[in-house]
Length: 183
Image (cartoon, rainbow, N blue to C red; front, top):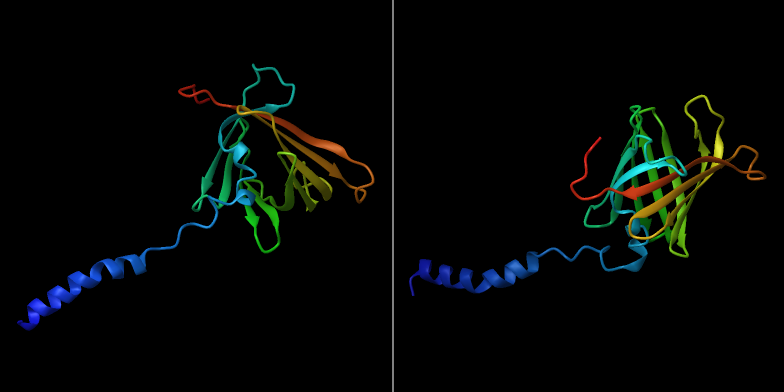
């Protein structure tokens, strides 16, 4: 057998083995329940203060699964020009969820939390909830799954080490209708 034919035969025989060996492993997150605890939040949302009339211009939020479904990513913007992004992920070594929030006012917050009873409970220290001049606070942030088309996000703050709590914000996310107008 000529050398070129032999090389071609061996190459063709080994190609499936080489391709199988080079195939990447499946992503680690999609099939694990602990990584799916915040999936109820995924979608396109109109966001208003809880109890605000439907005529109030909404903020907009887009929440999606990224990085092979290992990260829940939010992009948020208000009609007044405030915007921010959050990255939410389950940390398997620490067995907890973490959120990193950044915004166009220079805010950077790091929350840690756990899912419980179908909701997500986060906490953070040293957060300014009302802008750069507000006092540093301890914050509790809860995402309540209120069915397939609604999520409530409640932020509470304490400036006395957790002795007393006040509502910093209370938002209702309503799923955007398919083909609905974009304000």
